[in-house]
Image (tube, rainbow, N blue to C red; front, side, top):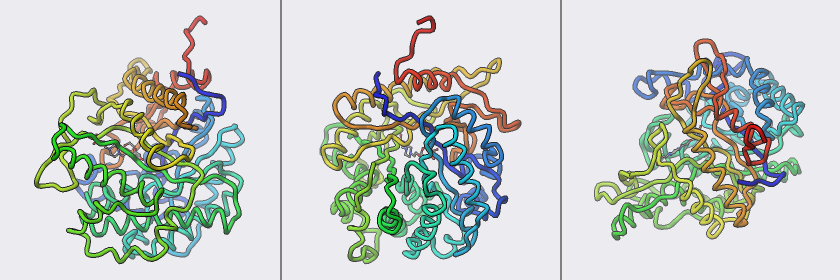
Length: 448
Ligand code: GBH
């Protein structure tokens, strides 16, 4: 594989997954603190109270990022550190991120900052959360102070991370916070997230006159029918609508997919929440498009489900999450996005894999993770040869961390975290990645 010298290599994390210090520095609870307290929602009722204690160990973590040699580091801001109560700006919370961003810059690492990686403040949830259209205003107040206080310290802004997860897993499937199971709420929540994205893009460009680049990150999973039957193909189309088109269409075309609106209408009371001008705002042009890629979907028809299609058995090799390893389908996805949606520069804002890592004599031999990442980096390199203009890659994740409903049971890091001692151990994949970054793709033989 080959990458030109402008290609940016990075790693990514998110606030609730690594910070800990849940009740320090003025932070109040988010919906994830609340969700973790509900028995049965998170593996062994784990929570982010301590996590990787990154809030206190950020200096050590910056040193690791520096030693990895990456160009950029993606992290997210915890909204309840910035606004612990409605309308109440908390300076101390902001200082943490200012310090983090400054220190990264001093080490020559470009901060890429996500505003919303799922930790909605509880005060907002208590007023209806994302289902309430006022959430757009709350988010704008939050975005405004972030843009103001971190001006000049951030290289790129990501408004939202994976609104599919925050919206559909949170408000429809009930497996993420806040744990609701109501499609009517979910489509409203998604709409308000997308609207807040568009408003924030406008704010940064117009109100601040800033030239810092800004975009959104979607998790996309190309979906394939199990067989060529009409029914399986219909199932794949619907599943693609639910996972991908419901987000791609509004962001890049300024409309929701009509077939999905019809399918959803069985559960959605009405579409009055889509007001005049909303879709225009949502499709405000951004500077780049962030994609998180992990796997593909394979589905078969099931008469009982109309769009929550049945995942079909596949004989693909799987990661420790049980997800198909699908670098070729990743290529299909990027080509499709180029054909059907956008010419914007693309950043792979997350890609990586969980495996059952074990420390042996102070080492972690995670060859499977290396294989996974290598296949996807090779795909990125191939895609760029085809002219796809992917400008960067962020490996998920820097550290093992709180993997949402799986708690600490799943390890995505290239750095192993001992949760008892908070010791960080370089896995083989971290050593390998440092080499890749250094050599812009090629791993040199040891004695070269
Ligand atoms: C991301 O979510 C998150 O942004 C990040 O916080 C998280 O830690 C990380 O990924 C790892 O999970 O069932 O085979 O069709 C990713 C969420 C992953 C959701 C893939 C849908 C479908 C796989 N997505 N998943 S499959």
